Image (cartoon, rainbow, N blue to C red; front, side, top):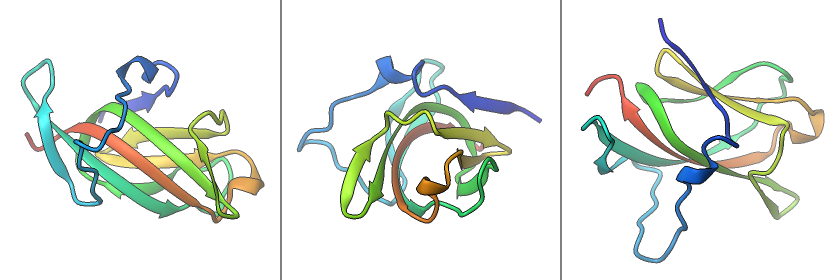
Length: 122
């Protein structure tokens, strides 16, 4: 069993600027190949954060092997906040992307996640 941790700061150099030529979708999209030749997929997830604190909550079962990049926006009271929060952590185990937050303030709010990844099934 492989356990992967995602350090958002370490992934910052992989970020891409979004522009009109990119098509972002809640449907999984094949967007290219990774350095090992495996297909790279992208998916936009719109989830509601759990009321559970300091516990990893499943947000996407996509047979994820490696996360290439992950960006997120937290939405509260109609205002969006980009991914500069240290209180959010993301983790992949057994192909499932999980989210954890450490402050009750972040519970039960909308989270939009853009994840690029390779799959265990390829």
